[in-house]
Image (tube, rainbow, N blue to C red; front, side, top):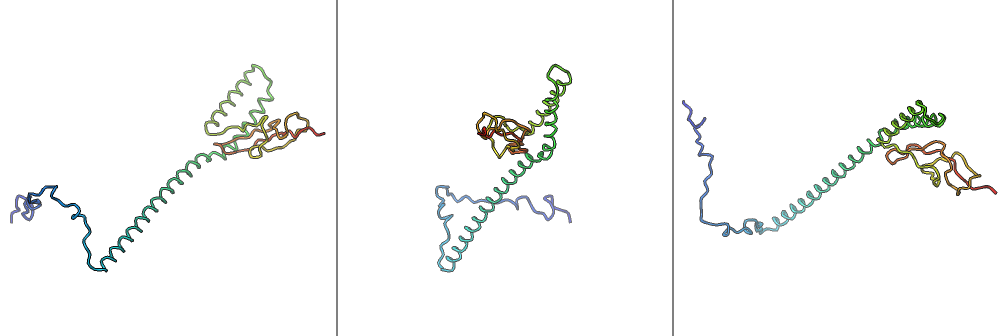
Length: 197
């Protein structure tokens, strides 16, 4: 049996077409309220069923909104934790690098001032190291001639002879550092306590 030119089974393309009859009505004649109106129910069982479905719809909508809010909170919390992780991932490395800065400062303090090439080279390396560490969020605690703050200072010596007001930081014995606004290491300081009488 030969196949029809329209394909297997002989279906013509016109079998898939829809025919719309023109009744002569316009959109102005169409009653929208009637089209979307709920069907009138005559039995109390149908009313109960409709009310039950509405309650279920409200509950499902409420559950959906709660789940969406929970998901949004989870997304924000995850983003915050990820940001914090990257901020503090370098904390252990920085704790080990900070003593290297201390040693550079000690070396510069012991080297006589002058135009020596060696001193200039050490200063350049120190400055370069400080700039790199600052780029990653390391910054020193401001400690000289400020009021002692136990949150950022560690008092290791008292100065009873100083003319400065009590609880003033007289000298920094070891610099303290912040990493991204969080204390990495407190500053070891000498604090004025007022002259003893």
